Image 1 (cartoon, one colour):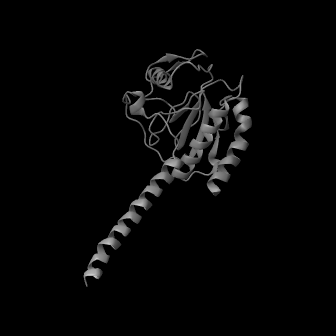
Image 2: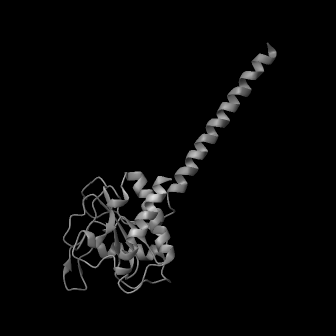
Image 3: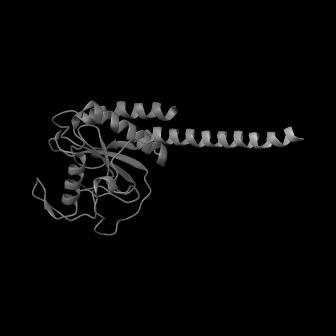
Length: 210
């Protein structure tokens, strides 16, 4: 009897250890599928300046900043600068006046080094200067002008990892991932990145199949 009583705590300890191990494995699997990124809190984002429209993400749209990449500037500085620009009235390069948006128009930003920054909350519709409805779109912008130069290998690697994570999380198929020019009259995301999109979609298909 004494031996039987002592077996129960040992069994319970074993079950608890197994439960802890399973939780740890699930946490590691989730971390593996979620790329590292600089959160809004970490880069010091200001609150949105106006109410934003909620939506259900159904597709992912890729953009470029159409500006020269600056390797020596931190991702935090770039995101703060983009937010200041976004939340104020600004004159665009083509002479048009941009209205003040509530927040950064894109949901994610990938800098020239391949670091990812969190932009607008994905629960809310982004903004655009072109004629298409961004409702249902998750917007990802890469730093650089890809009409002139290709994205860096690190940018492409970060983009694929982020796309796989978002596709899994929101149930988005690779066919619903496209460049900005697929929806609007624009050169964005630039010819060099646009040329990579078929290969990127194939990489995503293979990753999702695994």
